[in-house]
Image 1 (cartoon, rainbow, N blue to C red):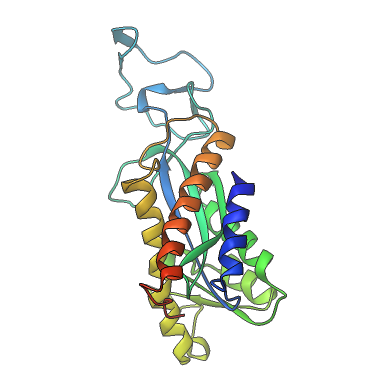
Image 2 (cartoon, one colour):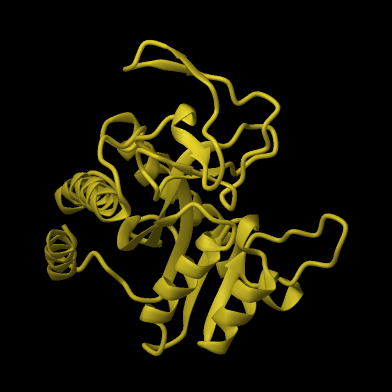
Length: 246
């Protein structure tokens, strides 16, 4: 699948659709092919089960379950995670995309376990792969307004156009960055990554995986992103839609 993704990018590059200066990065939670009932203690007795064998009733109420204490017996790579305090944790993995701002095409993809540091680690890997080819910028949302990501970008000579997070503290992105017109354009363009994820979940197969294990899940994720690129490229090549601002 990664080879297929690379061939799609080669076609986009041959059509002049991949400038190399402005990028955005984001991640999305992908529901794994595992249920809440599949999580059992790593050590000790399993929770009580009743009902049918194919769809048993499992009583885990009042039990605190964490990735250190519990594991899914159907997909050990699925971890309980939530990106919002208002939402419950679900068995999931996390997909990440690096997008070229002007074309809104994904130029790199990663799939990783759903962990707290996964998003910024994957983002830094993808950004570092583009560094060293002249001055580039990378837009991101507040979730990546973290010292590890912001400082990591600057160390590789990448300008972090990250949304400011000044709730209860000073933002690491100050006026030296926000005063430039490009910062505002990056904040507009970065939201287009949502259309890539949205396509995969609405029309593709990313709303809930039908495979187990990170290796197979990554193949499904890459295929969905590659198809989203092809759909976007058809419009760009036909000239029906201009390149996005960036």
